[in-house]
Every structure is written in C-alpha cells, then in structure tokens.
Image (cartoon, rainbow, N blue to C red; front, side, top):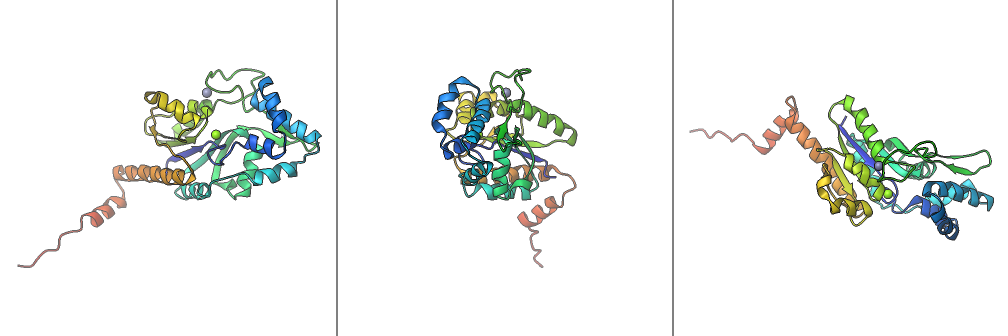
Length: 268
Ligand SMILES: [Mg+2]
Ligand SMILES: [Zn+2]
C-alpha cells in the first residue's frame, strides 16, 4: 500500500550480534568452531557444529534458550512495528538460518511483521538435531557472484525482489545491513532507493571506498535508536514526495489550507 519495501539483514542489523557466534559461544563450543573454521565454508561449519553439539547432549531447547537471550537494541522492535504500521512491506535477507531467525522473531512477537524471510534452511531432524543447509546449493552449481559467499548471493535475491515488484508499479526499496555480504545487494539498488549501511561496519567501509558505485541514496546509522529515527524519516520523505505529485490528493488542499491560511478580508 505504501509502495515501500524495507529489506533487513538480520545479524548485527536487527539483532546486535551474529546469531551463529552467539549460539556457538552460548553452548561453549567456541574453540571447536575456531579450529574447524579454516577447513570448510561457514554455512557447512554451522551444520557440523549443530551435529557436534547434538552428540554432546545439547538439545533444541538448549539452543532456543540461548537464542531467547540474543541481544537486541530496545528501539529495533518499535522501529519494525512503526514501519509495518506505516504500510511498508518488510522482508529479511540473511545468511543466518531460518530456525534461529524464526525463534528470535517469535520471542519478540515479530513473526507477522515480515512478508518474506530469505535465508539458509534450518530445521530439526528426527533425531532432534538442527540441520542447516545452504540457501544456494553450491555443490551442484555456483551462483556466479564473486562478491558473495558460495551459499548465498544477496544481490541475486534483491534482483528477484525487484523483478517481482516490477509488475506492481513503482515501489521503492530501503535496504539495511552491516556486513560485506550486504554490499552486493547495495550495488543492485537503483535511483530512488535507499541504502542504510551500519556505520564503521564492513558494508559501510565498502560503500565509502567508492560511493559513486551506489545509485541509491545512502544514510548511515550507528545503533537501534538512530536506525529507528532515520528509517521512519526516509519512509515519511517518500510519502511526502508521493503525495505532492499525486494529482487527486486531498492532502494537497489540506496542506494549502494549513500552510497558507486565506487572509481575512478587512471590511472598508
Ligand atoms: Mg549482518
Ligand atoms: Zn552477490
């Protein structure tokens, strides 16, 4: 309805940490994780770590308990709720996994705020072990993007979203992220879109290195409070511009009567 699609990264954007590290650290498997990291892709390692934790007797409930304690800035939830209330279509594009994301969103009552979650599949198998798979099955074919990890090119996901929106008239995208994986989708945004890179994080560094490559308007943010303020401000700016150019809007008349009240006629 608002003609705005807001796409959020998850780790260090919605939540204030990396959910993979948070779970591994929270269940005391940091050393094994660091030992195995040089030997396999991150996404493959997460599936392996869940196998190790399962064989150590850690249950799904243990994982859920750790996920419920995930740090999140207090202004993030109201920011998401306000954007939703203003009529924006909210989506997630994340290299975490569906189990972690759904558990955290559910815990904060945010499940219904998002129309789409694009992430690595994650589900509990018959043995009660969490399985994590790549979003893009790179054992069969490569996604062909050299900027992105083998299991996920967020730029391809943005292109898919853009293509699906093309039939719905002119919609604007607002993309929020922090990581190097958020650079590829930022490059796909077009004029009229907005990118909100988290200041002093990898995607911000990459954008600052060559700002001319970004067609979208760039608005940096540092924490949840600033994210809320800037996101709502951008949404309202888009609304105001749309209403100003809409020929059949009452808003126009209203603005005129408020901003330019008719002068009182003075009887002679
Ligand atoms: Mg992130
Ligand atoms: Zn890519």
